[in-house]
Length: 273
Image (tube, rainbow, N blue to C red; front, side, top):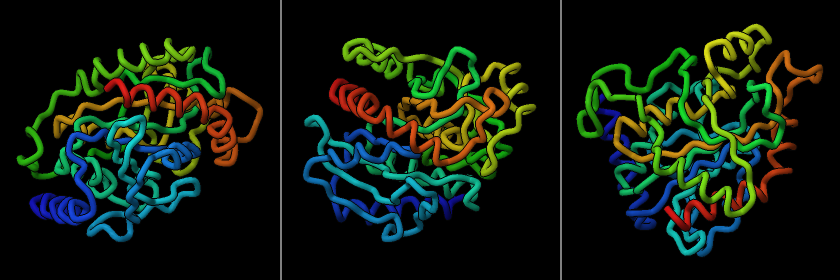
């Protein structure tokens, strides 16, 4: 585990030679949501492949760039594309960027994702603020010797997502006329979409949306005391709730339709955070 810490330090030190991200806001743009990065002013971009020890994103719709600049007069550090367990990375590697952001002095983190709707009142295009999560991925990025430099051995997950940032998201949504929903996000391993039986199970245990990311990052952010907000774009109804065959193309298509709403919401949150 000490080696993981040193790898994070090495990555952070390299990034510091390119820009100073202290007190900026971190943003992770999920599938089909990367266009917001194009609005960053005076951007400084680093390919993930150039950062020591960093994984490389391999999924369509995830460009694999770390971008620093200003958005609504606020310094932001944007991950244009994320890493997933199903790509073959271990839990520590795919969450490494969260710890690197902590070392860089990022003050808060906004995680976005595309998710399947389990809640019967959701429809494609719904934006859901994540209130809580269920880790059904079979992994935990804190497994092994604790990294004391980041946090305690047994972190409390009862408030893993910042109540203050969730309230701020609601305020911003009302101001620009977006009806935000709230719910529980359930993380699955992937890469196959969930079965209808798994979705029925997820609904019974209290999940409102399902996806293949975000949960490991939420755990690590809480462990290292980095305030975090999670927002899911419901891009499709989950398995068994529709006769349509699920596809990544549909995920990207729906995300593209709501991108303007999504961008306006994130920009206002960043301005007020």
